Length: 199
Image (cartoon, rainbow, N blue to C red):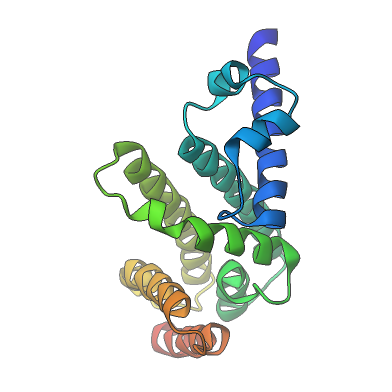
């Protein structure tokens, strides 16, 4: 058991240092060899934990996304309305200019976005599926709570998948179109959805 704890601690340390490097220098300027040297470990030691640079990137983003979602879950608990809960959930999409936690993760995701489109890679597909499942689970709980409270129509959950797809599409659009006002557009959509789904 002690060996597993040490492994996890070392992986967490490497991921934290990599995230700092990604945010500070950007992915284009990230040199894996320089990074490994900065850790004061051999390449062999590093590759024991991460087989490739891409594996390191995916694990860093997964861990940071998990941290962000834990933070979001706590914030959701403090909100009372359907609209406010959805706004908090999608803050990672919309608050990239006001919250450093979201801004830094957004920078890394945008810099590495092309890696996530490799549908041939089973590992990448699984990461995307896992993230979608977590997103669905959080939103499903919000919908369940609002249905149980009598705020939403009983069939409101049929909109859940389209909500995720629409929000993702808006986020992707914001990557392409520089002047796209993601926060305002997504907020307006959530208001329309709120009006459509409430009893």
